[in-house]
Image (cartoon, rainbow, N blue to C red):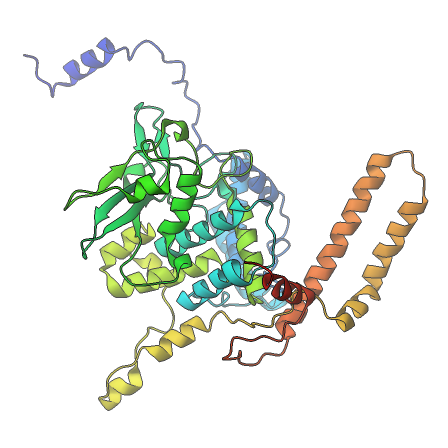
Length: 493
């Protein structure tokens, strides 16, 4: 028998398997990393930047981005420059430019040295969003199923501390179709892998309970899918409002799509008697292989951009001038996991490859300690720190959903608004041969009007006076949206 460790035998076996048949791809050319469709356009923009402070604008009405964001923009520029085929920028040049941003440009533009405060979407914010969506919401979605899907997406992200692009198609992965699917066919191994597992088991109280497990398509794990975190969701043992349960929301979606192979009604599912000490798996129907869980109307996977917009709009309707983001839910989830589990479990839960990630980017600057009572020898309290952490997101139950009459009048008499109205009137009276160009310009002007109204409304919302909410759960019903909905809901059975 030949020596398996022999180099000669190793190459002989390789030639026998056909290693000499196709060498066309081995041509001496440099092989670059493949980029998602959205990345090259970003590199193109970065590659044409002429000044480090010319591009970055602040968010949430800030004129400028903070200093670290400008530095990161310059780093993106250096990557785009090299990607376009230019020689790599010398290290001393990049260092000099970074120092210029930190010590000269920061002073010139007044760039903030600190990033925006980390916000934490605690349980109370989750409850307020759900209450708005299922009890007080006047918004009408394009189709009824969107309301269920939006809440299911919020639940899944909140309970698994996920980033917005790990279950939905992110802007960085545009066109890839990546996200959460029922089942995925492995292109190379020709086998089916489960993204979602659903089953029934007997819980601690001996009762039947549904549960599901999802695989998170985490950042940086494209070539190591075996390391992607898995998260379980369940019905829970404690009595909670129905809209808290992620199983109820997702089960409604599964039954509506007839996703189970052997069960097509709720009666059949509720009749399952699982064996003791193990989970009874429900198999997916073959029709939904490679089908995303969250879909658009055309069947393609839902995008993170659309979901983020819907979540933001829901936050405004719920009374948040600065609505909770999915990253705020992620920060709160990781904080709670860090308190309850080991650092290894926390890293796996958050899909972190470094122990420092949580401490550098997610941990509250208030460590949650009670130095006062510890010093005095009293029992440490947690409620004070928990309330301050929740206060990073503030809510006004009476938040204006439309401009008050006075503010609307002021806006309509502003120079920018009047100029748009005059141009619209001029377009209506003119008879142009190019109707397509006229209609395109008219749409642009109407978009500008909506942006002016939206910007003014957001400004007024932030300056709106606040007072403690009524303990009787009554509101003053400011605005026609709330007033009409409150009247109409009394007619519903």
